[in-house]
Structure formats: structure tokens, C-alpha cells
Image (cartoon, chains in turn green, red):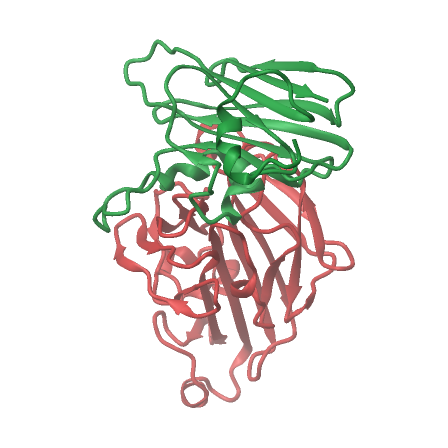
Length: 177
Length: 272
């Protein structure tokens, strides 16, 4: 596994095949909402260590700024501070877009991504306790933060879950030793 | 009437009615935590209850906006309405901006027979020459007082910084221990008050949450600074907060023999 090049990471992200060495997969459900005016939520997912320091940004789904837009056009990045925990812990210090993290907003449904610590956007994780935090904020809607604590490295395959009550559905974190 | 006269020292700098002791000045930023390039709009006024626009606009003559790199930037669309003033500011730099209205003044009061006199009159500036000309040498009960008032709020684009927050060393000032735009309802915040650049120990600090109009009591939080001028605020919830500290002492510039100094700050506390 260690010989994998960064170039194949993209493939890895999309690959939901059998377990590889020490990986984590997250799945975020964007719930169907019965509202008059629906906009897809902005979503960020990241990992914090025991001191609340961000060790990795995993996902950031938002309306990215269009390069050719007129200067006075409202830019999608304007609303990123509404993901207020992510903005505080990480976003406000980042230069956007972040390769491998930023992408467009997602529709209702479950969205999974797989990460290989030590490669790509997730650095090698020192043994210890971590928090996965997933935050969503929606125009004309609300904001919600879901957290899952986990120990790294995992001893066995484990799936941890937490559910949001409105802006986020089920969040799953699968740890593979 | 006595108190009214003593506090009337602020008149050269603020609108007349803002000077009465019952009226508090405030700045009300639209947001304080933003990304680079965004605009904020700020209202300013004077009223009994902070942020309630029912009395007088804030005078913007002394408005100074300090950018994160320490330079002064010009706010746009300044306007003074009947009940509030306002202006806009684009946050072109990353970091923390200081929006300040700092006013200085001096005033003499004395008695002329049974009549109470004051100089300079409202709207005029104190000068040594004018003082020598206008105030009799043998004026009865002459009191010359200096005032230093500071009204500030802070907004941040991206990561907070403190270059714009360096104290001037004059009057009462607040310095962050917890960054001014990194305040959350579930976390105590620590600040330090300085008087002439040194820790202001044992000073009372009053904090009032926005929305006084929609509750039965002001519910002011009252705190005291410790020996190092520090105090810790436990925010009861998210929202805008108005903070004030004031003192009187004899550290005045001649010919004044007494000084009044005040600091007022407005802070936005976010939900965790």
C-alpha cells in the first residue's frame, strides 16, 4: 500500500472496495427537507486532535467562486463563515480552494469519501483521541454540527455513527486497521 | 444639575444629548466575523439602552478605522440620520480592524454670582488662549476637567490579528487576551483594561446584552478588574454585547485638575 503514488489517491477516494491498511471512510447524509425554498447546504468535515487543533480538512462543499465573475457579483465563499466552527477552527486561515478538499455542493443523499492517513489531505495520525466534526449550513435554513469521537489507530474495523436532527442526517465513520 | 454639568465635558465631541449621563453611545456592526473582501455596515448612536435607536445619532467626526496592517482606512457612505449614523467598510485586508471614535476635551465650570458658567460653549474647542481670555482668574469654584472617551468595535476578515489593537497609552483602553472576534457563548473570554497604558486594577466593568427592549430588566453583568487589569466574562448567550468602564482621577493635563476617562466596546458573541 505504501508504494501508492499521490496520483492514485483520487482513485482511492472513489473506491469503496475491500479494506486497505489503516483507512477511514466517512459518509455524510444530506437529508430531504420539506421547505418552500431549498438550497443545497454548505458542508465541511474535518478532524481535530485532543487539543481541538485541526489535523485534517476532509471535505468542503460550497459554491465556489467563479473565476470570470464580475467584481461586484456575490461570491459563494462569502457565506463560508456561516460554517462557524469550521471557519473558526480552520477555514479562516485557509487559502481557498483547497486541493482535494473543496468541491461543489451536493444534493440530497448519502455521500461517502475514503481517506488514507499519511497520503493526500490527511497526514499520518499519531496514536490518540480525535474528533470527526461535520458541519452544515444552508441558505434560508439552519446550521448543525455533528461530532464523532474516535481513537486512532483502530484495533478492529469499527463503524461509528451520529445523527443530526435537521441539516444533517446520519454521519458514519468507518475505521479500518 | 450638578451632574449634568460635570458630564457635559463631552459635548465638543459628541452630539449634545449624547453627553447626558443617562445616554450611552454605541456602535453596532452588522457582522464581526467575515471573509476577506466582504462589506460590513456599522450604525452608531446614543440612547439609554444600547443599540435601541430612539435618541440621537453618533457624531462621526472623530471616527478612525485602523486596518489590520495598522494603517487608517476610510469608511464609505457616511451618513448621519435623525436617530443613528451609519457607514460601510470593505474588509480588503485579512485580520482584525479597529473601528474607534475617540474623543478628547477639556472644560471649565465656575460660578459667577448665582449663575453657573462654563467654557468653552457647546461645540467649541478648548484652547489655552481661549481659556485665559474667557475664564476669570479669580473665578469662584473653578473646576477644569479633562475627558478622554473611547468607543470602539472590532471586525475581522479571516484570521484575527492584533496590529490594529495596539494601545495608544492614553486614557482607558481594552486589550485582548481572548481575541475580540473569537468569542463564543460557551467559552469565558478574558480581556485587560489599561489606563494610560498600564493595567487598570479594581475597575468596575458593566456589560449589557443586546435586546434590552425585549426583556423586563437590563440584566447588566458587573465585573471588577483584578490587580493586572484583567477580567473574565461568561457570556450568557450569543449576541451583541455593550461593555463600559469609566473612572475619574486627578491625572489631568494642565490647566485641568481632574480627568474622566471611559472605554466602551461592542462585541459579537457567536453560538458555539
